[in-house]
Image (cartoon, rainbow, N blue to C red; front, side, top):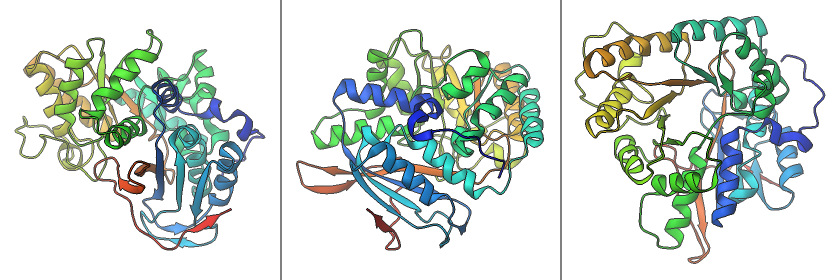
Length: 379
């Protein structure tokens, strides 16, 4: 991989942390929500374990003995989506380190990052966006020591900002970002344990609105439970200050309302038009529902795999949607797809119900816990 800079990540990791994790920690502290959770980390492409030993050392250095760590050790082979690490502990102790430890593993698994290639891909995405603002959100896909350099390239190529404070220095600003799935799943766990009825996405949005600085746009992630349309409309009704929603449907799910949705003729690759994940059909169906329910003025942020080709496809759909409904299909891209790294992913998959004394399933829809006996507890 590209030569690593000398950075004390254990001391400075918050500078390298996606802003939405920092805001999650703040909201959970204010609300007194701190369930014991289980995180699961995996990689979609099979290979040989690299970077896990360093990532475990980093986690221990910042979380101490506040939880349990189970891991495959470097040098072992692993299958696609096989867990490389499982973490158990209070969510407030583990939410902020996620960007850095994922970056450590992604960086170790990626043979080389060519900055010329990064610049070309960033430029291609910006040009494909045709004036739509683009936010760089790829810190977790690369070794943390590259974040500042990659963010600077994105700034020079026209992106509006990035998700970490260290990267945002290129814009003389702070990191941008609002809510991740971890915030909503934490609310869901807390509500389940305490018998609180309601919509966890809506309650998390209320928490964000209550505690986060008023100059931060209220944009809510709405795909956690694969109820993209339902949760968007319920959140918009419950939080009048809402400025937009973000759709990041995972590759295991069809977006609510997208199957069988009638679309105009669009000259775009089928893989972007329909299917699982963030597709034109999914975004179209959500946006159409918002317009028809009187929320057409809400912004809509799209993220997940937006390289130049996907961006071009969505711009064609955007023009068609504006011609039909008078509103843009979406208002902003979030992307980390500016090279071809091997990406590590982490999800909360369960929580420990202290009142019942047992672990309970709790996760983003489509990402349940994968059972394995291969992980070793790291003392």
